[in-house]
Every structure is written in C-alpha cells, then in structure tokens.
Length: 407
Ligand SMILES: Cc1cc2nc3c(=O)[nH]c(=O)nc-3n(C[C@H](O)[C@H](O)[C@H](O)COP(=O)(O)OP(=O)(O)OC[C@H]3O[C@@H](n4cnc5c(N)ncnc54)[C@H](O)[C@@H]3O)c2cc1C
Ligand code: SF4
Ligand code: SF4
Image (tube, rainbow, N blue to C red; front, top):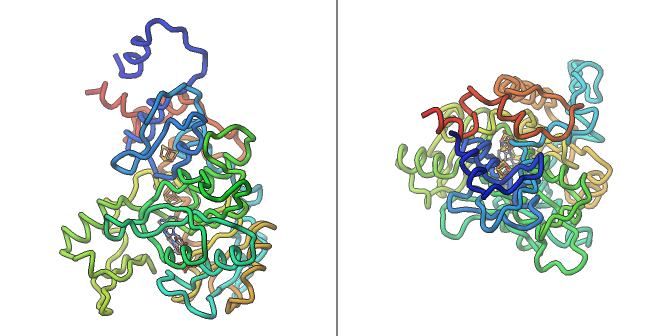
C-alpha cells in the first residue's frame, strides 16, 4: 500500500472533507520527487504559517498542516498552471510583433511597453551587468515609491551562496548587487517585518518566483504572515535554469575543479558558458553551461518562462553588449518605476532582441518536451493533485510515494 493511504488510514477514521490536499502530497509530488525550484510560494501561501525552510533549503513542515490545499494549489511545480499568470499576449507567435530588428525580422518578447539596452551612468560595484536592477531599486527607495525590496545577498556562512532578505535602505540594495545562481526561496520573505503599517515593496526574482507571487496577488485571501498585496513592482531576472548550491559551487567548482571559493570574485553565465573569475582577474572557469547540467534544478526543465512574462519589468544580459542590461518594460507599474530611474541611465534601443527570442524559443522547446501535462495559458489556474498524479505516473518525476511503493 502507498505511503499516502497509510497516512490516511492512520487518521483514526476521521472523515476527510473532499478535495483536501495536504503538505505531504506537495512533498511527494514536488519536493521529494526532486522537482522543487525553491521559489518559496508554498511558504507564503500557507495561512497557518505551517511551512518553513528546512535544512536543505527546501520547504519543510514546522507545525500542523490543516489540509487547506493552498500550498499545493499555488506551487508552480504543483497545482499552479504557471502560464495562466502570464498576460494574454505573452504567447502571440513571432508573426507581427512590436519589435522590428535591423534586418526587418519581427520579434515578440511578450507583453511590452518598451525595450532597452541600459547601463547605469555611475557604475555600482558588484553589479552583474549594467547595474539596472540595483539602480532602479535605489531610485524607487530614495523617491519614496518603495520602503523595502526582497533581494539576494551573500550568505554569511556559505561562500557564494545567495540568500533572500528584505532590503530596507539604499545601502542594503548596493551590497546585494550581482547574481547568485542558486534559488533563495524568495517568497518565504514576504512578511515585510519592520516596514510598519504601510509596506510597499519590490520583489526581484527568477520568473517562477514572479509567477507564484502573481497567483497569490490574484486571490484576495488571508495569507498568514505574508503580504503579497504589499508588492508594488516585480522584476524578473531572465532565466533558463537555476542551480543547486551544493551541486554547482561545492561539487562542480570546489571539489571537481579544485577552486577555492574564497578566491572567486565573479560568477557569470554568458554566451552559453559558465565563467568564473578570481579577484586578481584570472579566469578560473570558461566552460559550456551544458557541462554543469547535473547541478541544475530538475524542476527548471519544465519552465517555459525565460523572459519572465508575469513581471512588471524583465532584466537580463542576453540581447545586449557585455556590461549592459537588457530591459523589457511590460506594465504601467513597470513604466512608472522605470521613469524614476531614467535620469541615471545610459539608454539605447535594445541591441539584439532576436537573441532573446532565440533563447526563449529554445527554453520553450525544452519545457514542452519535459511537461507531462498540456501547456495551456487559457486553462484553469489550478490542477488537482489526483490529476497531477495520473499525468506524472511512470515518468522520472512521478510522486515520490509511487516510486517508493514501486520498490
Ligand atoms: C538563477 C539566475 C539565472 C539567470 N540566467 C540568465 C540567463 O540565462 N540570461 C540572462 O540574460 N540573464 C540571466 N540572469 C540575470 C543576470 O544574471 C542578471 O541578474 C541581470 O542581467 C541583472 O543584472 P543587473 O546588472 O541589471 O543587476 P544588478 O544591479 O546586479 O542586480 C541584480 C539583483 O538581483 C538580485 N539577485 C541576485 N541573485 C538572485 C537570485 N538568485 N534570486 C533573486 N534575486 C537575485 C540581487 O540581490 C540584485 O538586487 C540570471 C539570473 C539568475 C539569478
Ligand atoms: S516549487 Fe516553490 S511552491 Fe513548490 S514546493 Fe518548491 S518552494 Fe514550494
Ligand atoms: S528556469 Fe524557470 S523554474 Fe528554473 S529558476 Fe529559472 S525561472 Fe525558475
């Protein structure tokens, strides 16, 4: 008999309301199945604050689960049909589109009001590309549009690991410039602690984190200590995959390549390669990113959202010259935020929009090949657990209780 039914039998014959989904089912279908992308949406969605961050940086139950189903419903690898968080015109084919490249080819980057190649005029130390994200947040905070921002900063105990935190002043933002190629459970930090009665925050995250946030914002429910309604602007970092910290930094770089992580000044994924530079400028690693595929998160394969369609602004390096940020302004909120920082930027037309389109197409191809369910932006927002089980059974990502009962 499966673990699920064992647990249910042990519930002393209590009759369960129909349609309940419990945390242990989220664990079986996503976390223990190796599909968690560490976005933190389940932590934010739990109205009884029963989910915390466990020792491996994964969601863990910290008190009683009531079976309210919300952690399952809102998980981008569980019940959330993530593509339903995208605006309607995200999926228009690259036929007639708003961006026309120099050679006349049309490119469609989803909903967009404007696109730019951008760089902050006075460089921000440690910024990954053009420093657009840090400059934007600093301007928004100085001008009083936000009083906090969920970002990633260096872990004090694990070298080159990013951890989520709530920045409360421009200095916090400056010290968090740059990219960490691990997930941080960003949405587990939506409690807005210390921001008083009127928190107004920005969230910077990978596209899956923005999807989870958008879904929470679309439902006016009680979210325990989390405040998705306090988020006034979202910034997605373009992303084809993220990595497991231990797999990438410790196993691949430290153990397999003998790199002392204290020597590392910069880690970058650019032009399909992973590049690692030392403090003295020496290039320590310059290898195709495919060599590190084993350290990437398995759940990323199912993600078709390289361009961060659900965000107010999407930012990356692809599509612009080195040292510049590619910026896609998607919404009115994004445009308003952009206007706050414009005066600090060197701006020009986006260098190579077709490079973004190419990577988006490749990302979608991988996702469509990996997703056992239909990809359907017009479908219902939520997928039942029972439906998930039947779709994933027999795949290499089936719920962990099926795998264990199979032997
Ligand atoms: C996992 C990952 C994969 C990426 N893959 C691509 C890619 O394939 N192609 C591409 O063009 N760009 C990719 N990027 C984005 C790129 O690395 C830069 O973050 C982006 O160009 C912004 O640069 P900037 O100089 O404008 O930002 P900066 O001024 O350097 O600010 C970056 C901001 O992002 C925050 N941040 C850093 N790491 C994380 C994280 N893991 N989670 C949440 N917030 C974080 C920082 O705290 C900082 O506020 C990826 C980023 C990440 C985190
Ligand atoms: S993918 Fe996100 S929502 Fe789903 S279990 Fe992992 S952290 Fe929670
Ligand atoms: S590839 Fe997709 S699922 Fe993976 S971290 Fe990036 S946005 Fe999230």
